[in-house]
Length: 84
Image 1 (cartoon, rainbow, N blue to C red):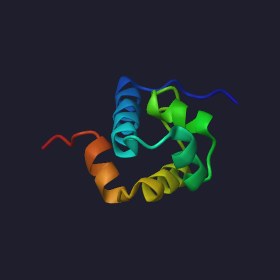
Image 2 (image 1 turned 180 degrees about the vertical axis):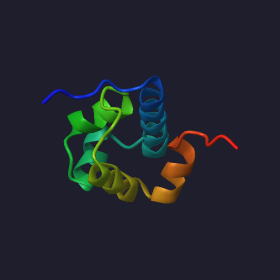
Image 3 (image 1 turned 60 degrees about the vertical axis):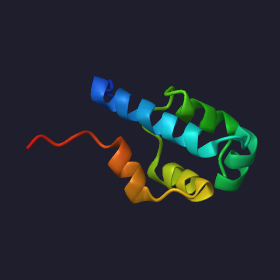
Image 4 (image 1 turned 90 degrees about the vertical axis):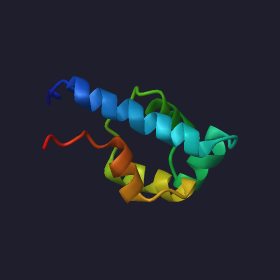
């Protein structure tokens, strides 16, 4: 199965998500946050650095819960702008 290449917008959205998660993590270690979310620290590192710009929904949901973020806030801050 060949994966369709990501668009520049999808990559940018992934970078925005990573930055938001890094900021929300603050001084907490990657390992501690990843453990609470039930993912590996390597997965969290890839998401935060944009190397995994399209993480699975349940991964994002678990991270949001572990960091005290709402999914609505994530969408508002990471969704592409809608043209009027």
